Length: 80
Image (cartoon, rainbow, N blue to C red; front, side, top):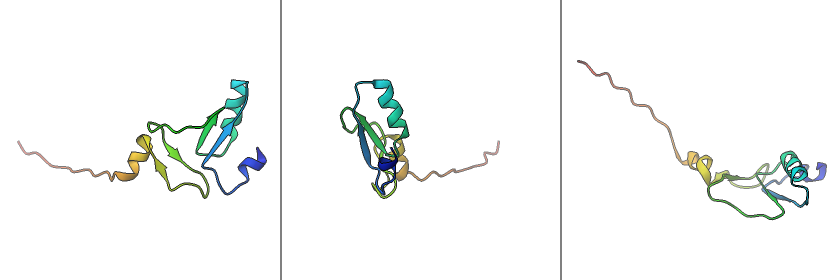
């Protein structure tokens, strides 16, 4: 884990294990944007982002959409 997390990169990782619970525990400790358990694939409904010097921000999912939005509140007084 120390070697995996001590790199300047962190776009994605893969955990291989026959023990699903152990694989989830290892995945939770990895400092990467995406993690595959026994395989790797992307899902456009889920956010995709790297850590450290990997990636260009967040893509996909609602989190990726927020990058393109700029909230604005408009207030108007309505007089009777």
